[in-house]
Each structure stands twice: as C-alpha cells, then as structure tokens.
Length: 290
Image (cartoon, rainbow, N blue to C red; front, side, top):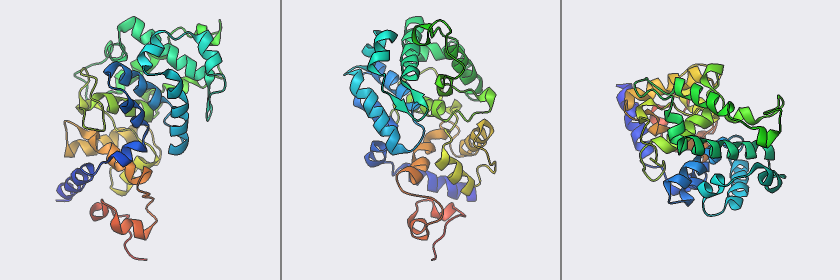
C-alpha cells in the first residue's frame, strides 16, 4: 500500500515540473539550441561543471556559453587548444581552471572526430542488455581519460595535479558519478519539455539516478537508501527503489525530487515548508507543527 501511495505522490510531483525550475537548472543551457548536435555538446559542458551552489554553476556556464557562439558543435569541431588557452585563460570554477575547460572541449572534438558524435563514442562499449550503465560509464570515462591531451597540457600529458580527471569519474572508483548520470538522463530520456531525448542507443531503463545532496537527503527521508555516503552503491539502491514505480524509466523522478531542494527550499527542518511540501503524505521527515 505504501508503495502505491508513494508512486501516486511521485507521479503527481513529476507533473508539477515547471519552466521556473528548468530556468534554475544547468539543463536550461541546452534548451538554448534547436540542433540535437548542439544540444549534445552543450549537455556535456553544462553537466561537467554542475557541481557546487546552483547560482555559481549558472554563472560559470553563462561565461562559457557566451564565448561558444551560436553553435557549440561548430565551436568544438574547430577548437584549437592554443587559441582556447588564451580565450579561457581567466576561467575558474571552484578547482577547475581554463586548462581543464580546454581539455574538455578538446575531448569533445576528439570524440566527434573518432566516432561522429559523443553518443557513438559512448556506444562503442555500451551493453544494451546490461541492467544499467555501470560498466558503460567505467569504459566511457576510461576512454576519455586515455585521449591524447598533450595539445592542452604539453608533452607530459595530463599532469598529476590536474583536476581534469575529476570531470570523468567512474563507478569502479566508488563515485556516484552524479554529473555523468545527469548528462545521461538529459540526453537519453525522451524529450518532455525538460529532458532532451537526443540519444537513441541507450535505454532509459538502464539509467542510474544522479545523486546530489538533495537526492541523497530526500531519498533518505523516503527510505530509498540508508547509506551515509553518496556513492555508486547509494545511486543504484535509490534507482532500484524507483524502478519499482517505473521499471522502464526510473530516473524520470530525479528532476522533480531534486528541485524540491534546489528550487523549493526543502531542507527537512522547516515546519512551514513541510506543511505545504508535495511529498508530505509519504515523507516521515514531514514536520507540520511548530
């Protein structure tokens, strides 16, 4: 009975997703473009730097996309590291700098040159019969980190003190791979006004939820995982619970749940907010009395 009630509440929550929430999300930058090729490149960039406070993320992405011009795909196809290092010399997002951004743009160019698109590059090692994208992400991140980054970093390649590898973690290391899972959600789930639906070779059923601080906390309230660390095991545990509600599209709930915290201020400690929260009926954390 509780599962049925939770599904009803979550489905109702999904129906309330709004342009206001999208505007407060890095995914909004992808919606600036109509061409799927531009959207794919924009999704890689926007998801890569989607860590930290949302206001800082949006400012960082604005600073990047204003320099990419009307077509991110066109920009990266012609991207030259020597020029890029001058253009983005002042770039900084927390501990990533201009060299890391240039390495990312260079990686996208190499993926396109090798395979035609980032999707084709990803699909080279993707198993369509696997339960989820665990091994695909392991292979994808390894393949990107193995590209030739000497044009960006010099003859030594990626230096040991570089934070570029941070942009491409892997489940094998235990990382929750939040930004990569978010990227996959954007490009794989069908176009619905929020997600983009531009990839066809990966099933939405294989996606794993991106675990940020909001998903970690709210999923704990709902009993989807009792783990303390936001790691890959937690991401799979939460996804397994959501798969009971929609086995074909378990991460459809991600955007709405995350924006309870990102846009709607849920922190589990505000009785007034709890009283009007859309998941109040199934959230044991709910505090409706002062």
